[in-house]
Length: 112
Image (tube, rainbow, N blue to C red; front, top):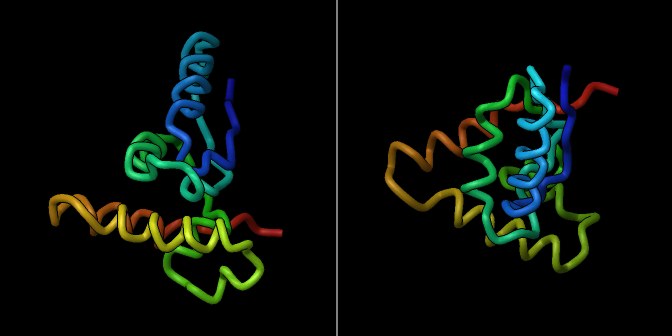
């Protein structure tokens, strides 16, 4: 069985609830369709959990961490969340923060 999730938006409480349900259902593979970060207060923790998934795609909020022009269609709240998230992902031990950013940077977007 495969679980497909998306739009976590740094909401660790929601992600943990979904992961608990996934474990209870004995799901074998987990795929994330993107937008791990954005809005919520725990981008680092969410990213660490999602890095363990079988496949992760790049969402527009994930991409905006590296490309400011991607926020042109975002509302003010979303733009502020991108700036704040960028800072959060860049902090911490040097071996961790580049790894987090590299992980996001290397994700592929969903092909249309």
